[in-house]
Amino acid sequence: MNIVKKKQFKAESKKLLDMMINSIYTNKEIFLRELISNASDAVDKLYYRSLTDKKVKVDKDDLEIRLTIDKDNRTLTISDNGIGMSESELEDNLGTIAKSGSELFKENNDKKKDIDIIGQFGVGFYSAFMVSDKVEVLSRSIDSDKAYLWTSSGASGYEIEEAKKDSNGTEVKLYIKESNDDVSYEEFLQEYNIELLIKKYSNYIRYPIKMLITTKDKDDKEIKEDKTLNSMIPIWKKSQKDVKDEEYNDFYTDKFYDYEKPLKVIRSEVEGRCSYTSLLFIPSHAPFDYYTKDYEKGLQLYSKGVLIMDKCSDLLPDYFSFVKGLVDSLDISLNISRETLQENYQIELIAKSLETKIKKELETMLKEDRENYEKFFKDFGMQLKYGIYSSYGMKKDVLQDLLIFKSSKEKKYVTLKEYVDNMKKDQENIYYACGESIDKIDLLPQVETVKDKDYEILYLTDYMDEFVFKMMMEYSGKKFMNVQDEKLDLDSDKEKEQLEKKNKENSDMFTSMKNYLNDKVSKVQFTHKLKNHPVCLTTVGDVSTEMEKVLNQMPNNEGVKAEVILEINENHPISKKLEELNKKGKTEELEKYTKILYSEARLIEGLPIDNPTELTNLVCELISK
Image 1 (cartoon, rainbow, N blue to C red):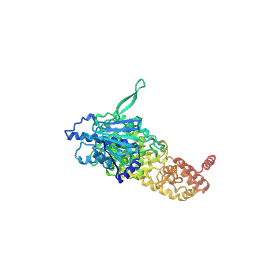
Image 2 (image 1 turned 135 degrees about the vertical axis):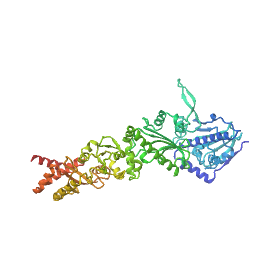
Image 3 (image 1 turned 180 degrees about the vertical axis):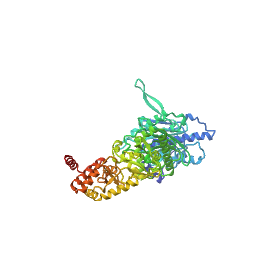
Image 4 (image 1 turned 90 degrees about the horizontal axis):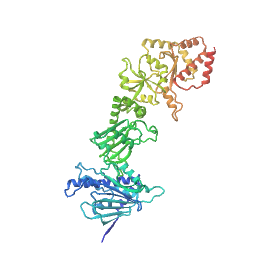
């Protein structure tokens, strides 16, 4: 007579089971990954046993995991021909939640390197109850002729009875729940969906995962085809010499849904305090949502070939968020559900190692493949710059040598190192100028003078560029200098002395001119910074006129003003005209000239004019005389 043993979970186990079903696992499809991993562990244990026990004979080619769908009875069965479980093992492993047979097996065999057991916590099996009303586990141990059936409908308890099974191994049969308004459980009875889940989570399980797939022949007649659903060997575990570039490109475009091949492939295998394999890709273009809040960074994280997280953001710093790829590690410590990572030093070690590797590969591309690096920088250079800005310059040592800017010398991209290496002997600063385009920057009055001195100028055309330089402050001991900064001084000592004398002589005139402008400028003065242009604005302090434009375009930042000086070319005829008006006491005409010159200076800088009507009237009035 067959004896059915009815047993209750312990009180704490009931509570834990309820938590697991309703709280720990947030993604219901995870159950299949967990059950496949358990089946893989069981097959691994049998194979390992065959290596150490001559009585156990196993042909590795026969080892497999099989899925069976019965839509009529709403069941999904996951079976393996692994080591199986005895009655006591069924009760110990399934009757006591959070007791892991796989973990115990690893502890007893931790010195054996040829073992790759996945399970850690003994809780993954219970994820089956998220999608099932009832679970049956039929198992026969390799050491016994008897099989046993474990049955449970959840926290109410379980039953164990002797049963029939022709061979060793385990079958887990799930009685899938009926769909409701919130969840469609039908997807777990669809061949296509099951195949997708296998490819997503368990594609690299080392044993074949097979299922009978329904197809149609040329006569539209349904036939059953036994199909292996997983590829088993990950591309990143194949010998690098055996993988062609086309294979990496195909893997990337298929895995990350891109229509172009990657710009660069970065593969590495690291052994040490935290061992891992990584396969990274630099995309050839930015995704459409890359610079939006919707973009989600992260690398796929595998543990022993099983997908744990689709996007692990902790593995990439924000400034390298464009990198796609994956990491596979044996050393990752997971939380109880494997859905998230525990805070641990392994992730930090891997992230730091990846950062160094990515930086090195980008530097190599910059040095050896300049054309492709410039293509990369056009798409992702803004993110590198933002890494310096957002860290308040703390990450400049990591990123500064990856930055490139157009130069006034040859109108091509140069690095900061290349700029400094080509500096004139008497040059103390790295000169730059800001604007919407190179052509517009070249029209700035101060640019003409700096070029005339044969100093190289960096063109900053991105809105963030100057903010980045402000955070960096200097490079290789050379300070950054905006050519529009009031501190720019290219005069000789004799020229400085002559200019200072001239400004003192006209101090009363400059005070009057400043007052005419209602303190819109902090000072008016003559300058030698201008070659042919009559006037310009220079800035004092940290906010330049270009930064003023950027900040005023941002929400809630209207009204930001740069502190400016109105500078008039002392060698231009207009300076003589102003001095003449002042000496003759023609204050009304001096005021009109002042307002026109100030408006001209703002126009040159690309800044708005407060009263265009007044300006046009003044210009017309002077022209008509």
